[in-house]
Length: 195
Image (cartoon, rainbow, N blue to C red; front, side, top):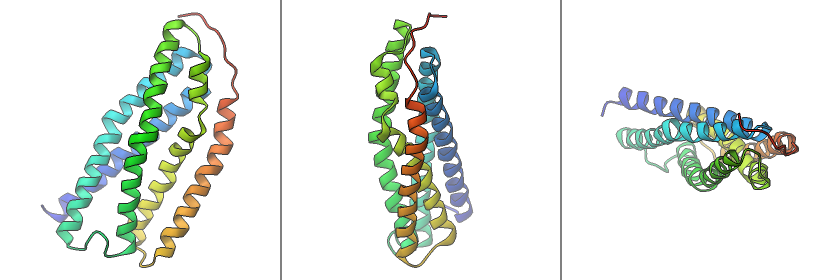
């Protein structure tokens, strides 16, 4: 396949994936901060839709086009720290997204729809919304994504760029989780009438 076409598909995959992650992040924030069970359930449904229509296709397109680019350019998957780092981060994010983030979103949607049918936020739903690990992985998606992009742009020849980037990414995700997740989980549970 032509190099420019592969590069276009790679950038398109990045755009789809990034758009889906940003949209899912904002619906996640909406669900965590809302006092309305109906708004929480709606946000959870939107989050699932963004994942299915943007995140998954974007990740598959990004992985496939990246693989074909490496093969087309004959640069090897582990020939340089920048490309090996991108692959390591992509594989990590793929497994993290399909285990922690996906299972949390699925549980939360199920609990939100159950709470919606009852007409009020249940303690189980509020507990699921307050999970710190799920919030941390949301922030980690952004920070590690920025690191992957910077590896592709700057193409460092040493592993120190990658190591410092990992430390900064995890540190930033931890700080954001401590700062923003605590604000969202301190909301009170309210009973409300069905609209």
